[in-house]
Length: 201
Image (tube, helix red, strand yellow):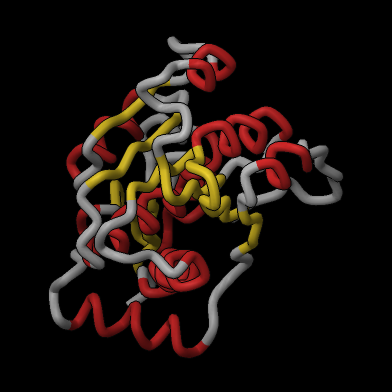
């Protein structure tokens, strides 16, 4: 049940957002946290989900997990994306799992009026600038989802036990405990290939 911990983060983020079946959502960041947010949203019945990332392998996995659309931001400038009418003002909710100044600004552009930006990550020790006029002028909402509660953890376990979420969809490699140093190195330095690494005791 080691996967229940990151899954609980996805449960919590969707609960903080108040995700409902009719929402259109975007997720900026397609790593493990973005992926569990995506999967929980799918369980909640969301059909319109866009994932934005710079790593092609993550975007391919997002499509397998149920994303409707993916955007490789290493190929498409985020500033250009914010001006693209196909995406600007399209989303009820945007989950920012990167948390830098650029992604926060783009997230606000992607939101509909009164849409909700859920900040899921901020690099440690760094302050962020955000355009409050973009929030004020269209009554957009900024909130944050930092971790999870006992309630979220229990819900994550339920999703696994009832087979609504399959951990094997996220676990890219398993290593024996004797290879823990190699596993940690893979998890840290091979993020293009690895989503979730498991060390078996």
